Structure formats: C-alpha cells, structure tokens
Length: 283
Ligand SMILES: NC(=O)c1ccc[n+]([C@@H]2O[C@H](COP(=O)([O-])OP(=O)(O)OC[C@H]3O[C@@H](n4cnc5c(N)ncnc54)[C@H](O)[C@@H]3O)[C@@H](O)[C@H]2O)c1
Image 1: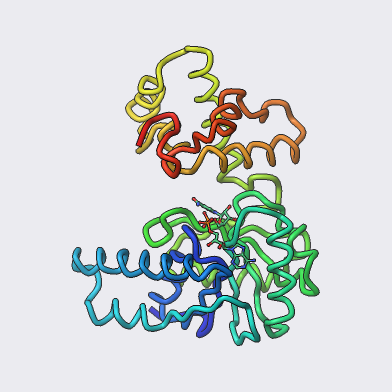
Image 2: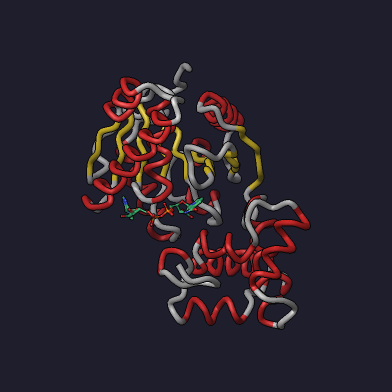
C-alpha cells in the first residue's frame, strides 16, 4: 500500500494518538509522535507494540513488517521544526489546548502542511482560526480503536479548501479507511446521532423504564447493535459523553440535547465508566 505522505506528525500519544500513529506507519509513513508527557509516549509505544503483536498472531502481518512499522515511529516531547506534510492532533478535548497546539504546529510546519484535528466535537473553524492557514485545517475524526475501525469522518471548517479536503479523503483511503465528509456543525454526524441515543438510554434508566441490562439488551437484540448504549457509554467515558452533550446543547441551542441529570450525577461522583472501574456497570 503506497503511503500518501512520507512524513506525518501526530500530536498526542493517548488512546487515539498512538492508534493514529500506528495506521500511518503501517501505510509506510515515517511518523513523529509528540506528547508533552514522556510516560504517555512510552505507554503509546507499548500499546502499538501489543496491537501489532495481535496482527502477527492472527497472521495478518509478518513479524518483520511489524518491526518495520514500529521502526518508522519516533517520539518527541516537543513540536520542533517539522518536515511533516500532514500533522494530526489528538490531544485533550479542550479548545484552549487545541488552539495552542495548532499555533505551535502553524509555526513548526512548512506552509503547505495540512493540519488535521481528531476532535470529537470542537468546532474545526474555531481551531483553524488560531492559525495563519485556515484553508489547510480540517477534521480527521478517527474512531476507537483506530487500527480496527474503518470510518474516518472528514470535517470541513468554514475556510477549508477543496484541495485540502480532497487530499485528506485520498489519504484516509490510502490508510484503508472509509472517509465520510461532514460539515462543521456541533457533533458532526457521528456524535450528533450517537450521543442523543446514549442520553435517552440514561433517561430510560433514570425513569425506571427498564434496568441497565434491559435497556442494553433491547438495543442489542432488537436493533442489532453490537453493544448496548449504556455499555458503550461506559466504554467511551461518561465524562466524555457529558462534554459532547454539552457541546451539542450549547451549540445547537435545542433543549432536546440537555444532558440527563443521572449522567451528570454519575460524572460528579467520579463514576466515569471503564476507565474509573465504575460506570453503569462495575469493571
Ligand atoms: N477516546 C475516544 O474514543 C475518541 C474517539 C474519537 C476522537 N477522540 C478525540 O481524540 C482526542 C484525543 O482523545 P484521547 O481519548 O486519545 O485522549 P487521551 O487523554 O487518551 O490522550 C491525550 C494525550 O494528549 C497529550 N497532550 C495534552 N496536551 C498536549 C500538548 N499540548 N501537546 C502534546 N500532547 C499533549 C496528553 O499527555 C495525552 O497523552 C480528543 O480530541 C478526543 O475528543 C477520542
């Protein structure tokens, strides 16, 4: 598979960033994986190694190829001068943090470099406005786990050029993904449709319409969803679900997006799902 870009920078080595680095390296790119936290870089590399080992065990990848993929990823703690043709940002879901990262990327990268964000819900237009190149800023929304999930939502900001969009669509295809274009409105398509469903499932639980198992089973067996909405919310993180619902509520101004009081209460209690050991289920 030919790589679209020889050099790619990925900023943020967490859940999403390490997966994004892996898929680019697997397609042949040399990847600079950047994270302010050395521990996050080490954990990111360990996750990549484990993921590649699973592909080798399933005989979908040779041990030599796995080693070559790993060898194409280097790490650093700072975005210094970069020769990347594409940079993908996957840092915390906070607008101030992302704008600061984009200002840094704008200075560090050549004028032709495309700057993409993996944001789940923050406005691409707002992030792009922090740079001198809003025409080359775009949303490239990968799904978790990145090496396995086929979808990439490609989101055009107000100023994103047709060339930038076409290049990112072609790049996603070269990674073996299926790109879908969306406009820059709160939640794009994925979370605009998913989060109200999860929120409604939490309302059903709060109102005693059914039990957590009952609600999840209805959606699994009745709608053929691979995972019930409460299980999925625990997997995503209840704090993340709440933050996205707040973006939808505020950005679209429609009360139908108001986060369920039970969801707010769970987050206030520190019950964040899988990552905290307790959400709608115990882990
Ligand atoms: N987790 C998911 O399922 C998922 C799915 C799709 C999109 N996203 C989006 O992807 C992005 C990253 O999410 P995540 O779950 O990987 O988060 P995460 O918390 O696992 O990782 C974020 C990483 O960014 C690093 N970081 C923070 N500030 C930085 C900076 N200034 N420079 C460099 N590194 C910095 C942190 O040290 C951390 O390692 C978010 O925008 C999120 O909304 C997440």
